[in-house]
Length: 314
Image (cartoon, rainbow, N blue to C red; front, side, top):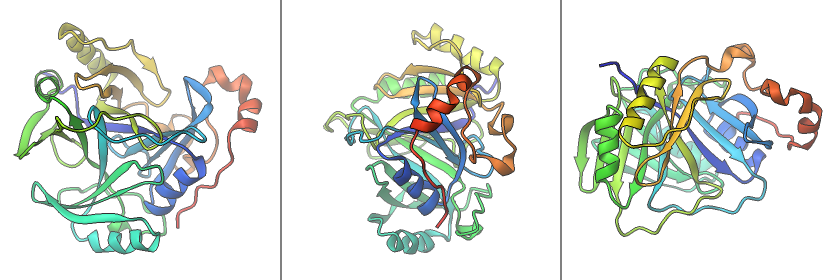
């Protein structure tokens, strides 16, 4: 059997203010702004991509910043915490850095023999930093955060579910994930070869309030697949199992299909190629507004109405 799912490709969330969003993820967390484009389905809204130097699959957190959007609510039927991977000895560095930027945090906590910090961005999105010795990815050297302490990419995402059986069945039987750890009401699955960036934690939360989408909420979780062929193969598998994935959509930097998992979280399968260097060199990623060709005739109008912002590491 082909390996159809390699791990996490990206996570996409909602924000309420463009500059504050950039200030948090570039300024505080030290990620690179790798692409400045628009929401292909709502072109008057940015689509901002943050990640490592090249925007590698497994490092990409993206946002639709809708000015003035009301804050969402964490709860069941939602991806509640997005966890990034840091080096095993970096917790103290990040405790000091979060304190310096007046970002409230809790922890360190223990989970599956790993230590992590928990906090929220300016819109209330749940973020974690997981210290581990497994991750050999280099992270982004932004000149402000020592590279040995930089964020490597994703570690884990956590899905809070009112019921877990059907979601677990989808992950195991259709999406090739393997159950690798369990404690209390938390179940960890890994895709592909495993390791940071491949983990999905499913939390059984039968008594939680239902999530409300808004600023600080995750819009969807994208899983990585190697090629258009493997994407079509997993699409056919999903159809045969009674799911209703979309047709393949061209997102310029990857091709996508979307479907709802049984608990209500929107899933995507995104191809690893062609990547973010398709329309600008790696050294210049994120420096200019990139539009799909069908919106190029509206460039002047869009540039005039989209909010200006500065992306600066601090």
